[in-house]
Image 1 (cartoon, one colour):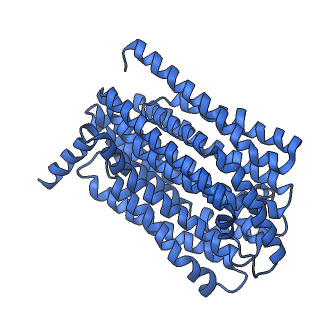
Image 2 (tube, helix red, strand yellow):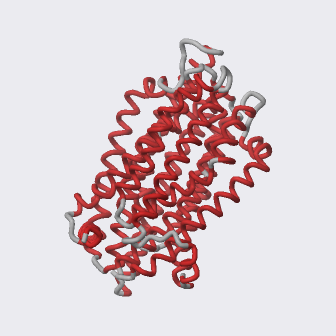
Length: 470
């Protein structure tokens, strides 16, 4: 009886609940988990910054770029599988989603093991390519060994499982799992950095706290998925994988690969940004790292909002309720643009205070270097935050395309946004205007990407109207 009531509640959420309420029901737990995870990433940088050593901050910036590539694998299996599961639920084909769920789960484990192996073997040349110096290489390797080489499986599996839970209506449970890891990391960071580890090993301590937290979050999320699999579209039985059809595989990877590519190319753009910033000096690289953490605040809110939107759009697209689908997209855009503009205003006013949180300028190994790092970061944040509303338009349009299964559009947008627009702008503006030009490139890249994304989605809608799909 309890299971039947739960199934009916999920059906009501997707089909009949007032749009704003349904969107907030799905998005708020996701936004909270995004913010908590953002906080623990920020806490790493904050505590490392308390040492007053800008080289340690620069090292974590390099290592974090490698770590963020794991999000691509989480999206490949989590969004690829989750979007398809939501569409299968909308079309009344719940049983078919069992095979999709199993493929996503075990595919994530396999990809994580392979990525850990590659990074473990090739970390030195990779860090050299990213611009590591003698001052930062050792610290970066400490972080990578624990968080990526040893910790990649729980990270990728947590992200994948959270996506699958969210897309079947268990957004609250997904949010709790991801938040659990973030809260635990905040608690463990000072303990591991300043109590367990000796002085000079703060980066290793931060990485150890992250590893433990990610393992705990993974155990919780997998246990939730195992529990709800008896009454939902999810499944942990690897034998189900053999039941997946060729069409379902195409749909799975048709959305998953572009989603992974979108995140991967975003990370490639950050690699280019770090490499170019490193040519200007370690302090400038450290400042970029601070800014990239600070600007993740509006991005975390907006990505959480878009992730909450995706399953509702996917379900209603597949069920044929296109009026509700369009209304959900419009509401998401209204909320997201409002929050992005608010963040822009706040960053322009409070940038010195925001950046000062990440770096101790009153004591430490090199106070002058710390002061210079904060000054660079303040300027960079005031420039880059202008792109916040444009980034949201890219996020929301891309997630909408993923929701309706328009994988080719997502892929084209990803390639143009990063490889055709943003990265070339970086090199050109860095060449002609130096460091300030490099930092400004995001405004032009995201602006061009947003216009291109909106045109792509508009074209898809016109084609589907003509064919009678919507």
